[in-house]
Length: 351
Image (cartoon, rainbow, N blue to C red):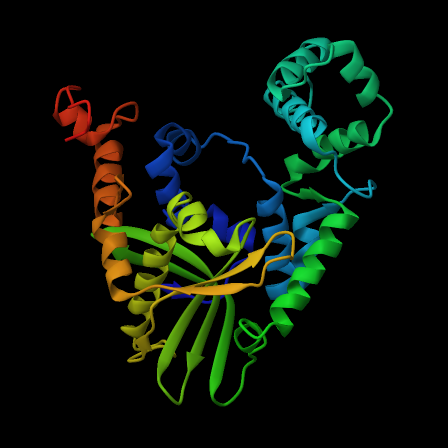
């Protein structure tokens, strides 16, 4: 097992090993998992405002020296909004899909424009949208997306960065989060940002993880795990993010990753007690107070075994690993293991 910041982020991403992100993707979209991790095809990630701000906040807070490697500052003060933003993102998506490995676009712009128009939800006529688009900041923003996304960069505006800087300041000064985010290395503490752990196993399946913040207390011989989340609904994080985005998978894998380090005699974690993981949650608009959400032993068991909330079932890590292994071994991706075993016949209520 390898632990530490031995690789650049690009090198880490290139390691052919499952992570909490890939397991979550398998649980929600087997087709995307198959394309990305089995066939090796490029799958465009769909950004939201909150996710972009979250990545900027994470970088400015934990690795500010890497900002220029991850982001491109737009010449536009602010990004397009509303339907125009939806149109620009759709236009970029269709353009990227029509672009070959040499950068040549093999579809007429008029066709790409109409596809994006239909996706965007605009009610005004296409000619009116085209008039609004041509020569505007929206067209500049679209051109920037085309130029830099292929390089792995995210386009951000001055407004985005200013907002992210305010969120970082809030995290560093707020009574809830300041003690954690401001902690630095000392005789008592070792602080690891973006700690990489590779090659740990859960149910005989190997994983890798990159954990936002790990704090080792040498006096108490404990290890604390924190993951930073930036969301639009801080006080409803459990339902709107933890469940909806299945962050419980991430929490469980991070916990087990660090547990494995405590069993490694060459690690500074050896023999230490691992505390249950926690999420540092900030508001993407910097209005609501940041909060720290902690997990109980029962929450971790639920994450592994699966659980039900308000009548909806959430698959646990154990089931997902079993299903993933089955899909890989049988090269079957268009039907779940359970439905295949049942010959495609299931009760209407899933009982």
